[in-house]
Image (cartoon, rainbow, N blue to C red; front, top):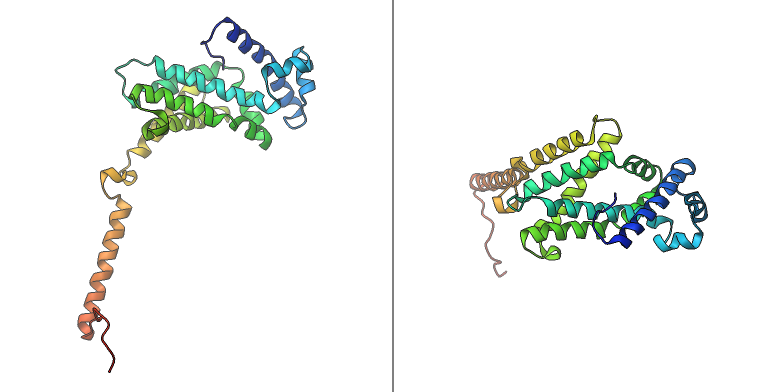
Length: 244
């Protein structure tokens, strides 16, 4: 996913990375991620091995860079939302915007297929995820006027954004939905329903239904114990008595 930010030189570098990525994904799909070499990728892209390392640190970095660009696109989408939008509205707008872009992105399906077939590919792809997620958290924090690293809300919004889009993409690629925006809408609706469930109340909202049930259960046990003691005419000593 190409970012629209940056100067001419940066955009040229992104374009060249795209050329190399296109060649690499084709080889990953045909020969497998594990068996594909840097030399093979460079040859398929029409560049030298030395030129390859101008754009990527190694083969794993190819998939990692995709996540970095993904994070950049998410950050741009968050920043472009109207100023009056609430965090919830920003989340929804961002998910739909990126879902629309990802559906038209030719790398979306092949990248998912490659990562699902290879543990090494999944590891390579997720290696830059913390970096991308921090970038997205920073974008949310800017809107909330807080510091990303210390703001739980910004961190949660970033994690939720990545999770919802990931679930939507996987559902769409596996044939669960005709288009990615529809899959994103379903994922958002499901997340909203789960988070609004009274059984999922936060600590700030008071005891959850599970906590209340546990408290009631403890109270019943105490009542039964007191009743047994009264019937037996027995009381536990409150302090240890001296012997003799």
